Length: 124
Image 1 (cartoon, helix red, strand yellow):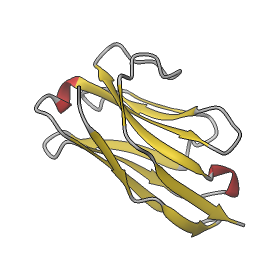
Image 2 (tube, helix red, strand yellow; image 1 turned 180 degrees about the vertical axis):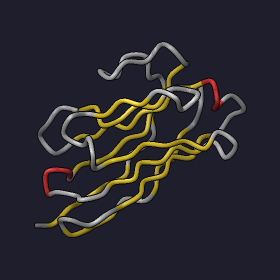
Image 3 (cartoon, rainbow, N blue to C red; image 1 turned 30 degrees about the vertical axis):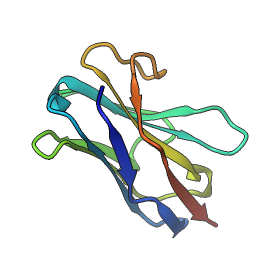
Image 4 (tube, rainbow, N blue to C red; image 1 turned 135 degrees about the horizontal axis):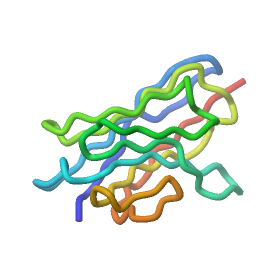
């Protein structure tokens, strides 16, 4: 399994931007699909974005489409989530996840490794 560490969360005003990073350990990062999920207090964990091992195929939740961008740097074993035009409803703990290429779904199935999460708070 791969170990994941998120960073970049914080407090931002509505309309602002944040960039989350997820650094992975291990030698086989390029064989993993990567995803971002989030969980707000009292709510279920929800899908945010997913990028396949090659970076060619990307999926977004409708709620973030056009505002968030997922990307990856396989050489540096890092996946990013650029978040623009943030809204208060984006407030949540954001989790990075990894799963073997071709086994993952937007529902979270197939993601075997998860980071500890980073808090994103968007004030009105």
